[in-house]
Length: 158
Image (tube, rainbow, N blue to C red; front, side, top):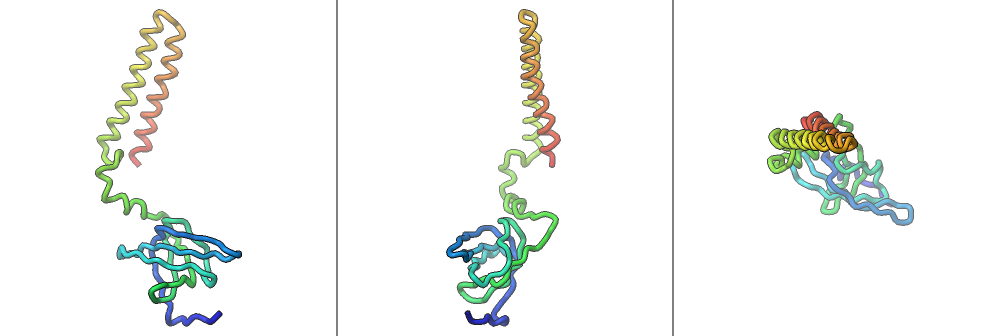
């Protein structure tokens, strides 16, 4: 193998948005697709001389690679950050169409669950006059709806 010229190498920082990795005869190879800060995508080849571990998709990474039409990865480094905002940035244009994007839909889900739970419990109360087990059965079926509403309300606001 010939030595690489360090002047022909550059470092690109971005978010890993995809990869196609394979292995043949103990050598890992493939390509990584990186989304840079300016929004441009770069496709980089992973070969025998590549150093570093293959990160998870969505990781912020710095890749040292050769220049040219088919850039080959020399070294991969994972940049440690508290949280990756990749998925938040991607979903931002679509948030108005998401189900839990607005508070109104969350409130409607919670109200629906509470009303269903109370109606099932009331059915148990009215049926309990003729059959005492109906109150227990309908009560046990109605209470989970109220619990689900509580969980949606607490976790949905995050």
